[in-house]
Image 1 (cartoon, rainbow, N blue to C red):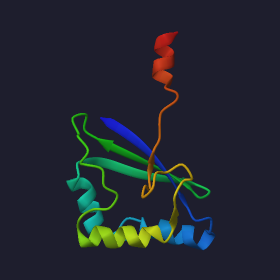
Image 2: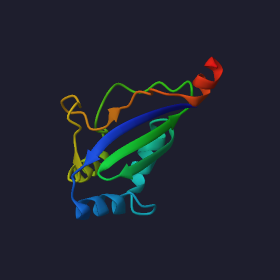
Image 3: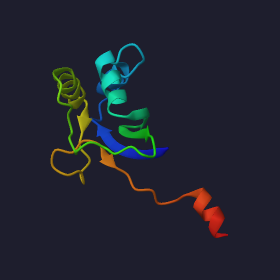
Length: 117
């Protein structure tokens, strides 16, 4: 199973952060969004928050090949969801133009460190 980790910031506003979290609750997130994530080949996805920093963990099969780079899905509902979420999000200073979630690079693995002992 592959895992990819992404980072993104929210606007530093307590009310906006609460709204963002509300939209991600089970039963509140739009069903079309959940369906489109699974249709893309994503096995599991989690988003964690500390302060206004988000970390998203995306799990997919080892043979998963990501589609061509695109920020927003092709369908109208995904575009509407992304526009709604964009109200709460702010880009990381080192993000490329048009990039929301930035792929994080691993710098430590306990398993690899143990093998090196």
